[in-house]
Amino acid sequence: MNWVAVADFIEHVDQQALMLGRRIGDRVEGGGVIAIITASEAKRRVDADAARTDG
Image 1 (spheres, helix red, strand yellow):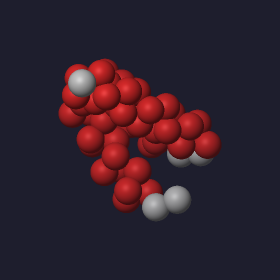
Image 2: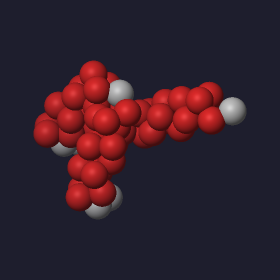
Image 3: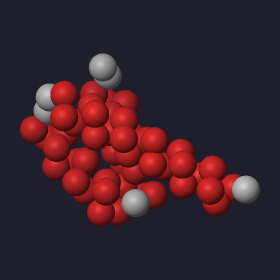
Image 4: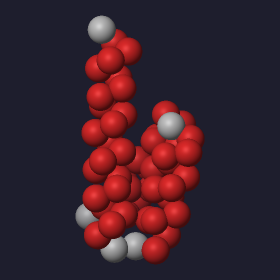
């Protein structure tokens, strides 16, 4: 996985949901699978929120 892309995604999530983004950022610093799973869950939540607000 490209860690630069993960960092960019974390910044995006931080803008969308500040507390969630901070928690993800803390886990990414530690590295490992947990960070990837958490980022995937955050993306799912952001996508769900976008769908809710768009229509």
